[in-house]
Length: 112
View 1 (tube, rainbow, N blue to C red):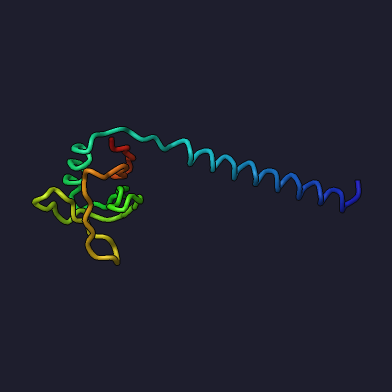
View 2 (cartoon, helix red, strand yellow; view 1 turned 180 degrees about the vertical axis):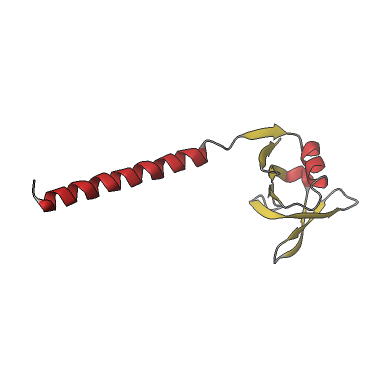
């Protein structure tokens, strides 16, 4: 076997090995996520007990579109809305009745 053929074979084996490792890593990342269903009151309870830690909330805006925000809880208004501190964006208010998903403490929750 010539030197060029040997080099081509080694390159091909190395490339296939890299692809196999890349596919293993992709599979490892996708199999770790499972979501638990919780009620809206449980979601509000988790947010209120977050102790300033950051969380991600997905909710339906007044115009019907979905919005996802990362931030920490500032306070809860007298109407029950949650005020969040969003990095570089100031304060944003979330209506707890429109929350559809909550990611907090490395857990993902589907809010029903």
